[in-house]
Amino acid sequence: MENRLETRILRVDPEHPDPAVIAAAAEVIKQGGTVAFPTETVYGLGANALDPEAVMKIFRAKGRPRGNPLIAHIASLAQARTLVACWPPAAEALARRFWPGPLTLILPRGAGVPDEVTAGLPTVALRLPAHPVALALIEASGVPIAAPSANISGRPSPTCAGHVWKDLAGRIDLILDGGATEVGVESTILDLSGPRPVLLRPGGVSREELERVLETEILLHPAVLQGGIGAAEGELDVAPSPGTLFRHYAPAARVLLVSGTPQEQAAKIKNYLAEHPGVRAGVLATTENFPFYQAEGILPAYLEILGSRNCPEEIAGRLFSALRNCDDAGVDVILVEAIPASGIGLAVMNRLCRAAENRIL
Ligand code: TXA
Ligand code: MG
Image (cartoon, rainbow, N blue to C red; front, side):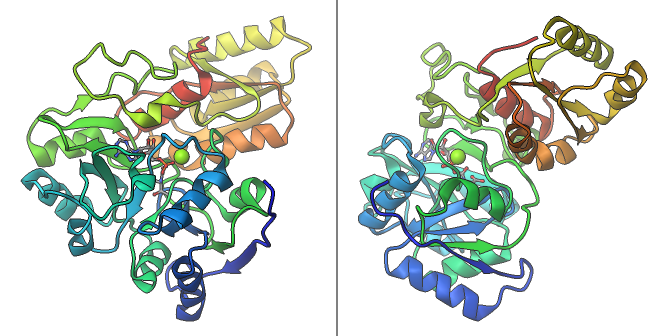
């Protein structure tokens, strides 16, 4: 980047944000600047969604492809309605049940939404986040805030201010440090713009929960559990999901997804380490397999316990920081144990499939 910015960091209490700190951050947004802020999922990199030049700063800071649209973050249902061409009953039902929360709705865009936000698509992505800092910032700014995850494009999303600093220091105006985020994976993205709801990205709200409210089956976009870039689009009669067209969630090391029962996974990892003595390997394991690694004396260059395979919430919360920790440990390869793809486990497996780009052991 040509012009290095002086990136400020302001600490903020995540539960009771200091109005003076929020006012300072809102001023940056109003002036057309960029502010990274915590949400309940991951940190976002925000700018005034109604100001095309401010929005372009997000793309430049992240090195994000222009064709990948942004989510507009709002603080009320009334504000959401100002950005859409229509507000169908399904949107009303889901918003009332899950907002504020980790759900993004894709709807036909309203006239006032700049092309820079939607990447020229006829739809707009809307989310009302459940984080006091995010909500206070949107309210104080008085405008919707366009915000992708606050990482360099393609890297794992940031779950604490340190991750944002590492990726974006010198590229953005301000970071609001509100501590670690809670959910750890991004919002669920549901496309309501077509004849049937389609899940484009699994996330903090599970497919099962959405189906209960809509009382209908929700189609999974074909790319959800595939690691290929733009995988299998066109096979089903659904519109392409722009987010799946780009490399994603990738640490610097190569990720290998390890499938099978816990016993099979442990055996595969043991064999891999034995067969590749020269490779610096990181292992991201479930609690269930940890005793096995101990008993067998398996000592990879880096080992982190993600949590129990029966508690995908716990694993989601640690996943992105664990991938970054592997990079910090300087490993060449990351072996990650697969978990059941139900509940928020679907979001975990989606991120892992994408990070592994179909390399499955
Ligand atoms: O939890 C989250 O959603 C976080 C926090 C910051 O809110 N944000 C986030 O943004 O993950 P981002 O940009 O990293 O991911 C948004 C995804 C992208 O894959 C993008 O392609 C998709 O949403 N998207 C945005 N607008 C869209 C649209 N109109 N149609 C289809 N997909 C869209
Ligand atoms: Mg992202």
